[in-house]
Image (cartoon, rainbow, N blue to C red; front, side, top):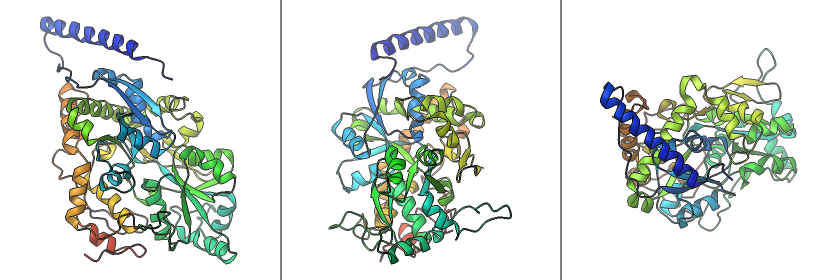
Length: 461
């Protein structure tokens, strides 16, 4: 699938090492110009990483294409996976050494929701990047309830309250209102549920005896793999969906649907994917873990540096069949800082995809806690947990110490700046109310946060 086999990569890496050695010898004569560091003695140098065909797998593609993995002495194969379950199973069984994962996957696996396995992450892959799209017919009905500006353009962000009368009309006719999301513990599931609930629409509960997530639901949410979202909606099986790019913009290009809101508008700069590995892999391969984290940090920096100057090149790379495999025009619609809602209604959202700014790659405990609160809110966690439990669970999965060790090495090597990293954080972001419903989230007080929600299971602790 990929252009270079392992033997070629090893040969190319050997040439790089020779060049570095020559440079070191030259420095002995001419004097030091920049820091020279030794490669980590990695325990495993041939690695296979999995991903799903979404634009937020970009750090993996860039680390491969720009030779950042090779710079760390790693010979990586990237392999697309059919769906999120197959991907997770591949990491657990060791068929994959690591993978581009939904942020909820390591947490859910570690607490035993679904497949039980201790999965960890030293690296958060991005912020934002998702959208909610509805069919043209649903949008036509919603639009009557959406405020418009003086130019008759919809005022954003669009509340799910505009969808509520449409859902009620379907119910009056005895018809289900079906929507798609990509996985039960996906960001997309929780973002879609958050948006619906903020607009007064019940998205349903999970229980130990009913894992459909549709108990008491006004809208029935079900799993659809990301690349199949547009065609499934076009067939009428679902009336809308929440997914990452490029599959919202694909609906616009195909003329079959309208994205009504982005996740940036639901929760400004929300954490999205992570890079997941088993705890066993990290314990047995600490230097390898450091090395791959270094490569991914460099890739994230490249994606955001110079005000996104590299994004057009990134789009061309991602458009290749071995990565996302969608038209460059479709991928570029969001990756280059704009987002199209109705056909012709293209708006600037420069932070729709963030890979490095705002400490995007740091694995914050508060990000993990938010996902855990949503699992409890909708019944995937079946009983109350203490605030301490949320903290301890987050710290068993997210590995900021590994991340900062990798960052320190990159600073010493001159690849990144000291100011790029939150060295003094306790792992919790400051409380924020930058949500569509303006409810404040404080990661250190998860039970208070749960109690503040109008729709959802309440904490009694």
